[in-house]
Length: 148
Image (cartoon, rainbow, N blue to C red; front, side):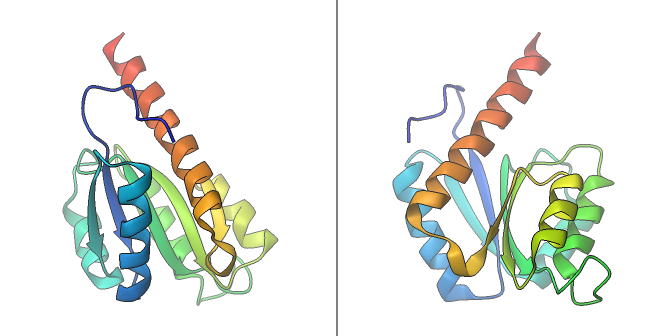
């Protein structure tokens, strides 16, 4: 992946309760974006972060959460988190790494502002690379529009 053209390094936040999976993601993100700063949070820490963040705390959010069996499923915690983010004045680009989930939850996640939706069990380094590259391009365009 080519480096982002912006002057500052991307700030990436990985949210997942699985520490081992988070470290796997960090490793691959370090390879894909060597200048990026990658932070890790579990879901309960992320809940607190959502209550306090300004929207400028990170550029890219990798959100690993349960998306249930339908958008109405109470276990679709990831959709609840996306709704909370959508209500913020400024939000980072979000790539969803869905546990469970299906086409219905994927569509709802994209409607709620996610840049990409990837089933966690199907994630490969190549798919991660593509999702991160697309999300960082969106961040670059957003920054360029603000400078105009």
